[in-house]
Length: 297
Image (tube, rainbow, N blue to C red; front, side, top):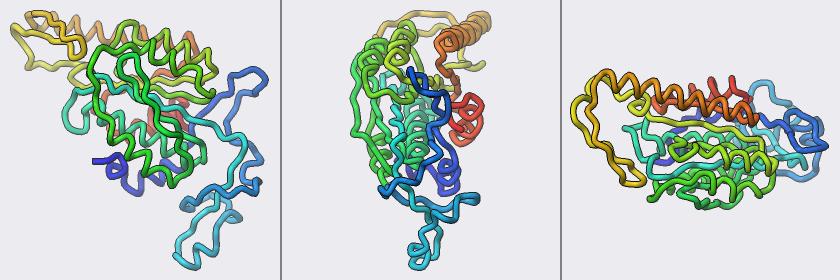
């Protein structure tokens, strides 16, 4: 099932009303939204999108309305368009969770939604998958009509093998053209990738991190008890444990402390940090938490 098939028409229309919130951090650029007041004044036609209530009627293509009896806006390129960098963790630890709460499945859909927001705003979208210390880059997508190719690319991504090294992967990506960069990852690696995040910031990227964990990673539940062997999905290392209520309580407290540590480290570096359980419906997360944290607006 492709991310496109997961998005009904109503959700896509809501995504078209959003934008990627970008603050200009490089020297000589003012802090603010990426869209300039002159947007739309260029003579270079870019794409169409459906009319939404409140849009400028002067941009309506009335010839298209006469043919199709639907309202479409003509969109034009603006030289201030940004490139949105979407970094998707496809390491082995992302292969976890049930149904729609499966981490990689949920993360692919989120990246698809964020990419659609940017494409509908005529920004360019570059997607990179992170596995081990390696980054695999897609082509750069541009225009709403590229959304199907973006969704197809994401649908083809499966989990990789080996141990994750987010620091090396993000550092290797940091020298790409500056622009907003959103990392979607479970951060299950040594140091949770903070050195690599710093490298992205040093490269001129405005960085946001969506920290995805499956429900049973946050709370294993009351049914899991007794003598168990826990196996690391990436390294294969294992540990024998006897799981009781006291150990479960320590585990929950440890997860909460770990997330707080990551949140503090991101705050210190002006990185937006948004933790989420993949049990949360994607639409509620995008329109709720991502708006509150100013990842989208």
